[in-house]
Length: 567
Image 1: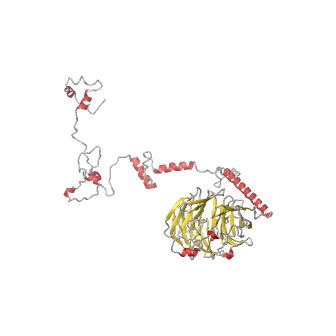
Image 2: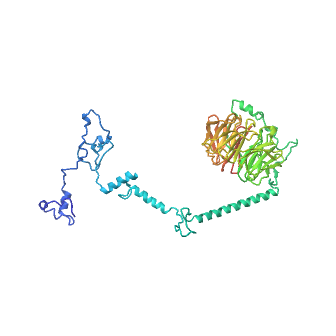
Image 3: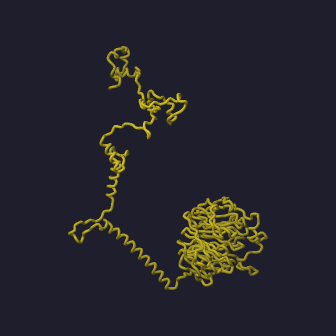
């Protein structure tokens, strides 16, 4: 094995003591023994000669001033001397620039490779690719990529023989396999047309038989003890002894009082069970709140007793699909219900009979009864045909249609004592209408807006809050110009994808809303601060409403089929 110490002469080997040589291993040569035991001193170490043409000014002689901007680590290195093998060439001279743009170094390369790179850069703007094979430029990579793309490109059917007059194909020829693709999509379109024709024929047969209004056999069952007491009072009339002097205070007096009459609920005091599927909404009896009405996705509408045993007093079955919304009239003797079966029913609350059934063969999503007590036969329904339809329950006919939205109408709200109408839709717009005039008074549409499926009006009738699909409650004025209040947002819940109804406390100091995770959130109106949130339902919490008399109690409903009373 040749080593760096093979240049030792035989005279140097002869100077080794005789008693040491026998002790050496047979595998160890004498010269390797000398190389291992005799240290060697290199009198000529490697010295950095880089930058000798540039003399660095000594800092100690210039009064602590530097004419360059080297790193701090380079200032501690010697100006010249042997190189440290562990650190490499990090002397101060290595930081010197020999050009105003940087450092120029000499490089040896083939003349052909240099000329190829220079000409490619000048002609095509391509430089040599450092990550590819040596000598292969970026231009070559682009050409190779273009060839690969050309292999997968569509090819036209070619027949350049002019003698073949029947099968000649010029530049107008179709692509290969295009006939098969056209045949596939043609079959799909024919199948869709046949399905549409079949549905249209079924609708024509239904219209010819006079079944435009599908009437389901309405049934209602009373679960209370007696429908009339010994004084002849109906079961739906409030009991006088249940209303004390504090409960007799009207809403205006409560709002004018400086003290807060409303308190945040803390726990569940009762759970109303009876719906077999989710509960879409819950409404309290007007003014007194001694009864509550619930609309379920099990095709049933139930009315419950808020006091006493809190049991179901009567159910109303007249829809064959889930009920979407219910609304009481001003006196509570009647209520409207709309369902996914495209029917709107007007019920007698006491007897459970359907007074009239209305439909326009479109799915109604919401109901709004006129606030004037003399116009309780007038209501507006937001439908899936992008229209808000006004009905007259006395005649059962459509009176007016508000048609400007580009999507299904999700909510209809009366403002300014019934003079204005606010509608929201899936088209992410809010439209303001004059009541009875199908012309939009004001458009509210911004690029940052989201769909608002539900709206609640503050008890003072000056503000309205909408459930935006970007997990926010947004606020607008309910009078005048209906300005957007950017500083009044309520955030923290996850309501995207669910039409969770917000609600106000009777004094307007608190805002409540559920979310898609089944939680209930309570905010303060003045500072938009989140005061409390807790788990209310196992499914989405769809509705919440405060009791008008017992101001610390509120009701929630959800997709778990339960209605909960909180206090």
